Length: 287
Image (cartoon, rainbow, N blue to C red):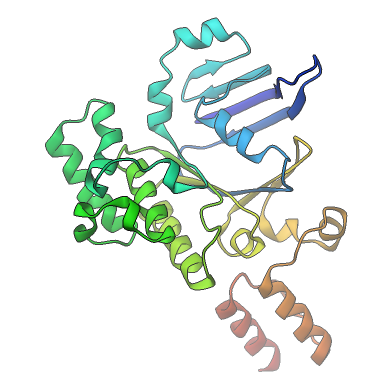
């Protein structure tokens, strides 16, 4: 496994000795390829804290995190002696607010900053920038533009291109579709799907959007008060028990399915994951 958590807990220091327990006894494994994971939970449940352990921005208070063979523990001195930059190259993290990651005068300089910082030559870094700007759905004309004159959605794409240019094996995105309209959300999710399918990368998305969870994820992780309470497929997550116990909002496609079943007194054999699948399933039932 590329990333492995073994009984990991993390406590933020507070003004008193107790502090704040953000993660509690987490056991988790993530592969370097083939995974499309969504990480969900209420605000303050520990999602961002968990993600920052995945690329060694944070290290455990208790337990161990293994990231591509590097063991991280509560021993700060030992952690500092290890080479952590290669971890951050192999596990790329895109923060929720892209403007925090953009600081150069042109998009090109922003994208090549990371690769050059890891020893990639100028020419190779520029070639990566040209490739990755297209992967995120923009054209090369953006490379000479100022990142500060871009829209929110374009800034998100540029920040993602900058991480991809470092050629990480795992891409982690913190609330990447927040603030976007439905069309912008869907377009960006298709970018992530293509990154997963065409570039062969494991993608982990922190989100509150249940439509994203249901339509795109192969695996869902649910955090509640710092504990991992669910690790499984999206269909199992939206059982009536979990929806009621965890106060989950049903994805739009499931709401439509259940409304149609009640209205027409029918029962679909399986739960569709998209509108196309819903139409096909309805066609089978009504002949």
